[in-house]
Length: 234
Ligand SMILES: *[C@@H]1O[C@H](CO)[C@@H](O)[C@H](O)[C@H]1NC(C)=O
Ligand SMILES: *[C@@H]1O[C@H](CO)[C@@H](O)[C@H](O)[C@H]1NC(C)=O
Ligand SMILES: *[C@@H]1O[C@H](CO)[C@@H](O)[C@H](O)[C@H]1NC(C)=O
Image 1: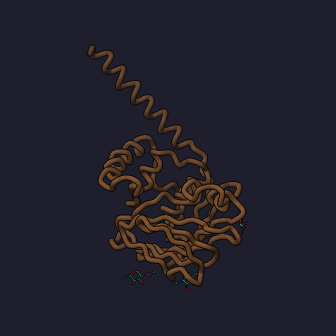
Image 2: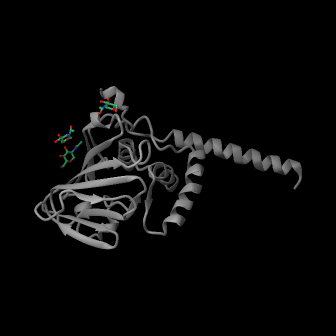
């Protein structure tokens, strides 16, 4: 190729990239940092996250939140298959987290590995323990009441994996509808959380390649508009 066309190609790629990064940085992000309850939709008809025990999180030992799925909204529509409802996480695994789910209200359905269970506050394991690498998801199984699940997240390795900031940013991105595929790569790779719908080595490879591209395009795993600085709460 002629040197001039090479430089033109490199130049236009660089121009496009800087234009794209500018666009990413200009996305409007609602300021939700520091709120104890964050709704995942502006209409407030899906679910919300309520953060608890913030002071316990300073040492990254664990954190807790409650996920409240609204019976009256899109996620309480039992006609819609559970996997198609916006509040149902994709079946996923965490590399370095143990999660403890405690049902506080409603009828919970959950999948662990390839088994699906349904239970209420009398019959659910209290808590339901999800070890690292076990595929899981959950959803509302009847819409008589809002579903309230308390989730405790413990890292098995210090300084790695899911932080409270992950859920704050996830809720904010859902709310502002900015969860593009590149954003997903960056956010989930950082949290070492992967979909369990394809074999793990393949998914990890996709995320290992996708996350740096996402970062190059200007996506981050934490935005100041969404992320509570814990020191400020002390
Ligand atoms: C969202 O809806 C829930 C349940 O209806 C309600 O408790 C909560 O106060 C609402 N939040 C906002 C910010 O409107
Ligand atoms: C964590 O928050 C829950 C709910 O507010 C409370 O019952 C519990 O005592 C708290 N735990 C600690 C260690 O602060
Ligand atoms: C964090 O850890 C240090 C040392 O292990 C301890 O002294 C401190 O009390 C802990 N802080 C909290 C909030 O648990």
